[in-house]
Image (cartoon, rainbow, N blue to C red):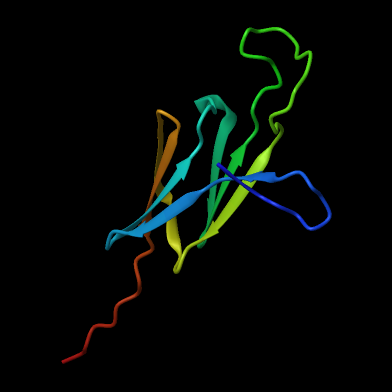
Length: 116
């Protein structure tokens, strides 16, 4: 995750870095989510948009409450627009070692058949 600055705020806001690859019949969206648990990630797909939502828990790594917190926390959302629509029912997502990989099948285009 990288940080982008907002003009009205001096603190950087976290964003989710993503790559989108066109694999012919599929799009593959890869997102880096270091330090995020699988259960804190949600993926939503609609038409040509993929929404990645991350809402990490507010507990410290030792299980207690924070005495001081300097790292950014709270929900983060990233919407990725794809070049064309995808089949929402044929989407797979896997999360391994801090990397989310979403495979989205492109929607089949209607084909015309020449009448003889």
